[in-house]
Length: 368
Image (cartoon, rainbow, N blue to C red):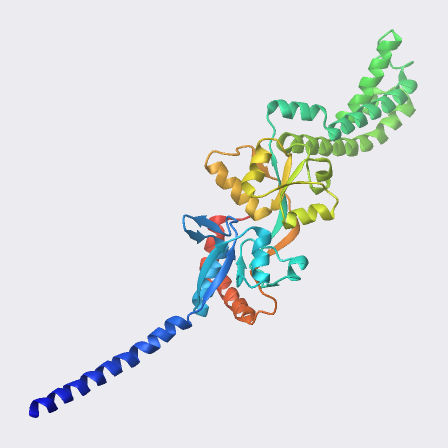
């Protein structure tokens, strides 16, 4: 009888211990279940989303890691194309789209955007010319032909006027006996005024010639400065970059662009026809192989892709032109009227204030 009571007390004690352990474990289980997993639609876009094996890195993913840590969330990533990423969020297939995603009014009709986390612009990449292409381009450069035309025209005009005033009395400047010889001398006198500045006034015998030489001294200085600037512009642009010197030249060029991108929207909005490519690798290859003469894309992305490729020994002659246009702002995309957008924005601003963010930007992009 005593043994039965002891066994009963042991059973009760064991039950109590088990009950207490169960009560301790249940909250842990509930907490694990309550940690929500965010469905992320991502698109590879170095340096913002970089896929390395089965993991993801880059600037956008750096921010996503900080945001989910602050909000106590986990996330899973699925890959999409550009338009598919927007569609996935709009239709509830994903909770947030993460990439180098520009905030535009057209996309705002489908999804909501977070605050901007990176500001960039559109830019143009071209292939630098080889020696033969540079020589050929120089000979046919419109700015060079205009400058030479101005020089010749001014030389003929000034030389002709001075010849009429001086050729009968000035044997020093006009010593040739034949008409063709005198015409050459007249042109040379005018050419000196147009290219090197005025001849000293006392070289002229007539008062009219000396007065004209004085006025031309001022005019030729301005003319020479203008022609020098025009020639410098023509040679610099031509030697470095082909015939494209800005967005205004894209209409006459073979232009490549990423399909469904803001760059394509910009070109279409300006009536510029472009060849579209499915990814940036194909886009850069087309430029390197000469199938297009320029490509348009986000400045930060183009610079990163070309710099990284050149570090690997590829695309040695590709470069981004030193000017930008059409400002772009990157953000995360969420469903319309998403209840979590305010918390995401607060966490995003906090992540951007973190010193690590500046280090990440410097690591991937440096200073633009």
